[in-house]
Image 1 (cartoon, rainbow, N blue to C red):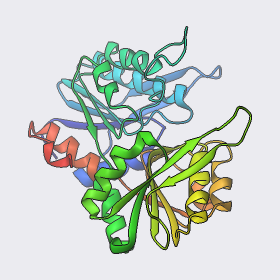
Image 2 (image 1 turned 180 degrees about the vertical axis):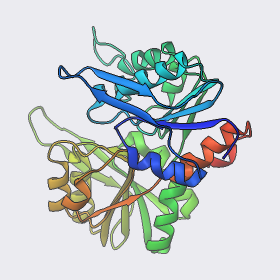
Image 3 (image 1 turned 135 degrees about the vertical axis):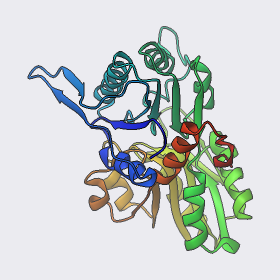
Length: 314
């Protein structure tokens, strides 16, 4: 066991925390997280953590507000129990899409959440594939934004014909991500250009790039309702794509997302387990779930040993 390391988790994603603990060859810290009858969350640490290097693994996915509150309370408990350093490991950062003002009189919710995490006594934050990189600047403490790319790339290399593969960005905003993957796979890219010609008319999706007869892989950082991804897949098929697959880091999959994917032309949806999928894996046979447990475990070990984690960034 690395000197002084302690690992804790709330109720959001215990399975991922257990995978990280197994990689580090340590046990999860003993913490009781429960609720009063009115819904209030109560936390008790059953281990001595004085002077320890504590890591709290807690994605702030659905139910977002409950999971954020659990994270804050566990960190506060660690601080009041005199933990030496507290790192919030947030595989999926909730509210990340609200990173700027897009209209008058709205909050910048991602910044507010960052302020809460910092104010409660967090010394460091670790996350995976932030929706907007500038969120790192919302914190006045160190932030390690890891990338799930190594995990996704390993699967793609083992299963796809790279000589006939095209990485497709579902919108203009994801071009940089698609280009980075294509460069590492030595394949070409395509872009979905989505526009609405007139008000109240359906969006038209144009494909920029050669996809006819190709294996295509739609790439995004997250899939929420899956509406855009499914429409983009249909556009690729219309343009003659031989096969359409999709990949993302964060499988939010809210609302009718699973049903949409099941009915779509997408043959495989590759995701990571930054968010617990519960019954969704059984409901959607097209899902391939890859674990980021070893990635998080390596980063935690390097931080605990005060060594560079730059080797984990590609």
